[in-house]
Length: 368
View 1 (cartoon, rainbow, N blue to C red):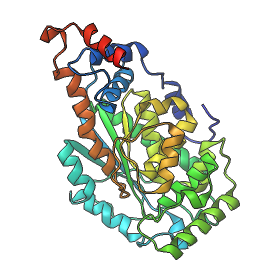
View 2 (view 1 turned 90 degrees about the vertical axis):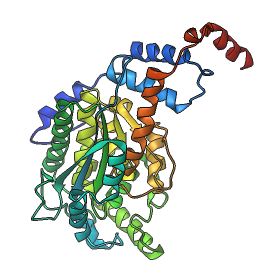
View 3 (view 1 turned 45 degrees about the horizontal axis):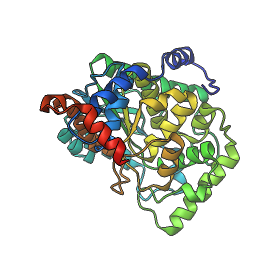
View 4 (view 1 turned 180 degrees about the vertical axis):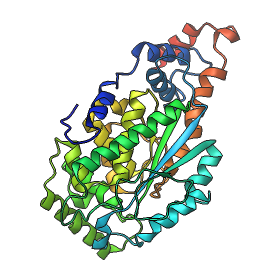
């Protein structure tokens, strides 16, 4: 665990971190043996075989299920939007929150198809009148402009993480088996790129993408703003909380908490694109064991995302050149994850066909 410092709720967060345990190796081996005895060549289903092995290690038994699924969408606004880093005005955050409530956003459509509920949390939007269907956990009305000072205080970052932990715990208590994470916040690819740059030491120009679709001049401006924010705030890469409070966002802090809380309760979390990826990288820097509970849904078109996945050593299930966010990649990955659990439950074994499993396995080894 990396150094973590802060104010209120810190003791609770430290206890949650201590509750994150390694994957259950025995259950993983049991699942691997189960998969090897199914009517197929060894390893022929690729990542669809890796998934249930990971899920078994997370669950602590070789019969993991993903019957109940939920996607958490954290919403927050960013003071850095004042620097002209987005193609859309800040008001769009609130408009999209209303769209989530009406069930008309992309995440709603894809979550319905995947059989997942969507939980929308206002953790830091500028919206004063929040729709009643949205869970109100606002830390503050948007972050400060990180280009001229820290985005938030350490106490606020800790509060955001704590809100995420509580969210994960509440969903665990409701019987959720599989979590996806997403976000909404105009301008949030800027803090995500900044955090990634600090954690990886990769150049900002390599990491920074067009976000909502800014032009070439806008991209140059965005890179300059991130450089200014990092130079002015000087976040300590060995202190994830320092990075989060200086160049992060409230929705990112909330997602860090969801990741840590879910890992403590042994629930797999499917990460989405670059913003949830930045949260995943921060959670990993806080407690490396949390990475074992993460599943990468897709590879975002935002350049920082590939570097994030490389750092986490996670392989994405999909590559659809998406860059929307909201948890859409997680929703698309849910059916694949469910398919992986159906394989070990519903496929026949070689023994059931009257073929000794060791014959097929030996053939595979000889051909190799």
